[in-house]
Image 1 (cartoon, rainbow, N blue to C red):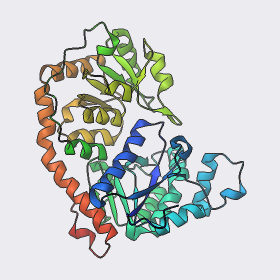
Image 2 (cartoon, one colour; image 1 turned 120 degrees about the horizontal axis):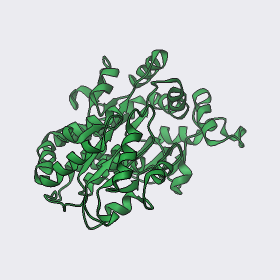
Image 3 (tube, rainbow, N blue to C red; image 1 turned 45 degrees about the vertical axis):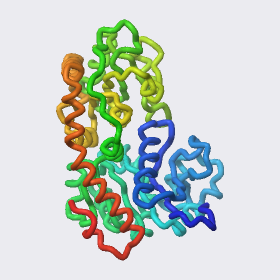
Length: 387
């Protein structure tokens, strides 16, 4: 529970996932940073699909009001029961006492096919109903929403229409929610973080692709894809070239990249945080969006192999639209040409980001003001954010 005596704003974060996916953990950290930027130091509690992974009492497992009566049900069943029986009393009390409720950024609200709809609804629909109940103090941080089909789309639109702000990080999500007056375009939280950086962006990187040491080669982050088309052919080409160090961005639950990485890697893959601590900056080629964005934040130039709308949105916001490829159609030759272009003119690469910062910073100010307005709900949403 929240402390009784703290004068700091009490903030509840919904829709968090697990620390095993480093991109999801990054988004939780960035959500907290964004709220602190607007409100100063806060007292946070975070509702997660896998709270035990954090090993911290500030992270609360998403579970149902009948959870105490089904002690032997697994975690996913307990979450799905929230759709029918509501949240556990502990979570209801946290929501009641919170000064602000925010949904962590990401791409979890989708239902393009039956299995995806069931998974998304089981983990998130109950949280959306909780968010609707406290809509006057609820804000959805930048995310990709959709696609949806039929009745599920109508349900999602109806629930989102009753919260104060919904920020989306790509134009297709805007189109999915067209007609809702509380939906606004905003870059991904990691893009906002990169735009805030006061460090001097690196202007050069060594030519590494011909190095014999695996730890001096470009880094490749991969994942399994649904409807992969030519993606696995590219991975075979990359394996045969022996020109990459393979790395892991996500390692648990339904986002476990360890098996596919070990299948293609010629040496034991390292986790991305370890690689980003290397003193030598290298090119990162990442199928995981937040593998690419966390690399940029650390000063490693990145190429993104995108498989969803969020990737194109983020790299377009950064002025790097020519450095994002469709993961399902990428070939090794395409990637090698971009690596060569980037390493030959890294000053130009970082200059694109620098030129995008002013626009990103102005959008971030809208988000900051929207958070403040949500806490002080006497203001109108239209007065602090524009589409």
